[in-house]
Image (cartoon, rainbow, N blue to C red; front, top):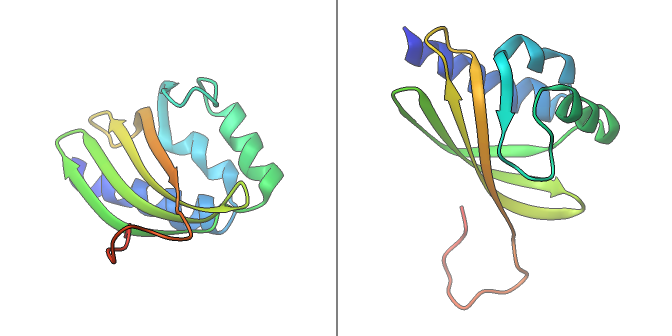
Length: 121
């Protein structure tokens, strides 16, 4: 049951909140104080909701999702993150009801050239 709730929350985050710009949906997906580990964003949902409202949308493509217990790992292609195509991995920790408690991320701009023929995605 928790896995289905996590899958639904992940779909809402990327499809509705990021791609459609429906930032006001985020607080309903969160339990507790929402602990944020990205040093550019503050704890709680106010800052990230304000950011999404300011940029209107965060266009992205989810490439992979892995769920392990209360953690979800999402490999994402951000099409316009600060004016750059960016590869990202978001990690969310959920409570037993499938609500977000904590978030980590790692972001890397996609370079124009590479030393191999492999894609970042």
